[in-house]
Length: 236
Image 1 (tube, one colour):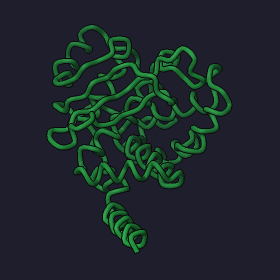
Image 2: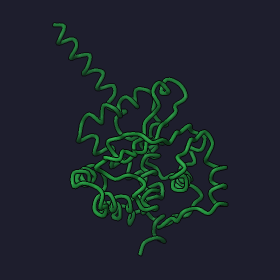
Image 3: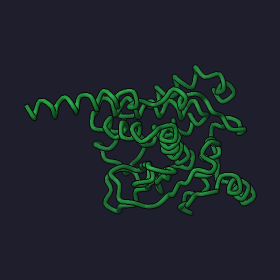
Image 4: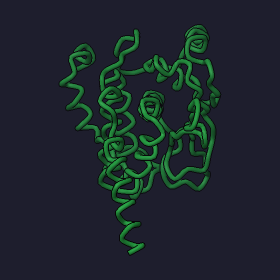
């Protein structure tokens, strides 16, 4: 009997979480900054870097090596201008990861964006990634934080549970890709997908297969770009 009651409690808890396990519609709407859509970014000049730092550097801890790409990506997330985010190196199982800091979900949320720097990593280290593609993967991680910001504690727990289901995880990651494209950084995400899935000489076939199975591939990204009017000027 105790086992049956336990299963019922788990079922009710799962039902409560299900509505919070997907990306919220508000997070999927385009939220373009004042920046024009640009197909290929180059590293910032000193003046451009100082300007973006003054606008988007509040409550942020950066990794200097990726400051240019990070500031460009942040400029497309005006709602994160004052959000506390710490970028730091970590031993991850993937190239980058974003998550709330432990216990911060009970108050003002603070976030980590972790950058893999393991020497024995069989995937792709960020320092090998072309600049425009760096902007793309950083934007994907910032989109996760923008989504976290729309959620309460139960919603964030729901995301964690969703990652336990491989099918729901794939759907969620592709929704985050879609939101990144809608925001205006589709070509940067396209370059990251092309590099991580096909072009990198450092990644193992296992890593590239994982990327192809879990995220939008370059063809899917370009297909979506062609249906978004804001991208017309960047199309060939």
